[in-house]
Image (cartoon, rainbow, N blue to C red; front, side, top):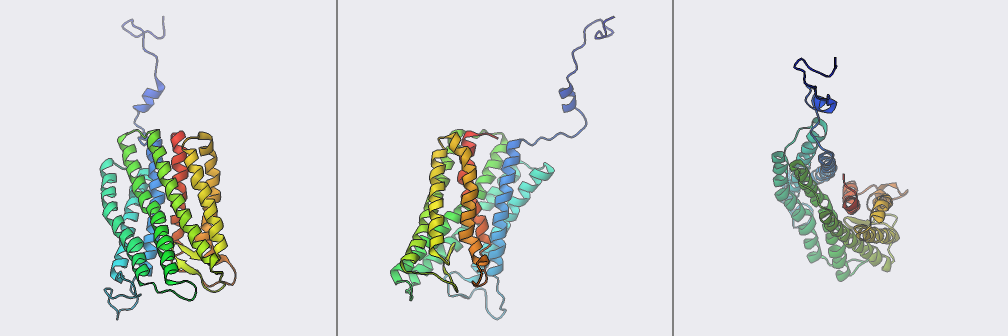
Length: 334
């Protein structure tokens, strides 16, 4: 008797083990690799925003109950209350992005509706933070600049506009804009929308361009201070994100940034260059961290670290990851 025959005399279909598993009572993961990757990146960017917002909230909180938060505490055009609110706003959209991404990664819980809500929250709060810290403060400082023993009035204004404001635009755009972009990519992945090679190539060009402009800002600051013969063992020249002890470090860092940005543009067309760009990313990130963060505290004999310098770590990684990541994704899918 045929063992495969049933009682009606017909032949039974072969058993499909995978199909049985798919319909078993065991819970199955419905989260694709692309959704997981997008959520992971959103988690990283949200942590960067959360740390920066916490630092800003702490630095701009009012420790003196006798002074109103509406007063101009530090001689700037932006009231302390606005800067405190900016820190709180960044904490809010940092936390929101963190929870959205964490629930997707750990609990496999998420939906396009929740991700859309996060994106809607992030946009107005992000713009408020950007205008408060990146635009209003440098513009006020440039208008009120009078010059000092090191720099003339014109040089000081150039340092503020091309160093402080332009550098802040590049770095903060990468952090806040990067979080927004990762939210959109998570949303697209949750909806099952395909991500085209041409779109990733375009993003590569955009973020490499951002890196090149940041490199220009960095080399401008270093070159200007080097031309004035500046070096310091006691206090730096500050045009955040540039806080310069030794101009030569800024110049060398800027050259590395130029090379990295240029490499990314080539990588958008070449899969071989894109694959090798991951190694260049490590070197560039370390060099930028040395210049923008680590120098503040590890060089013996210097003053204590400048408050808030830790937030530059998130700014550096945001600026370096985006060109490398999209160049790689242009040629290699998830």
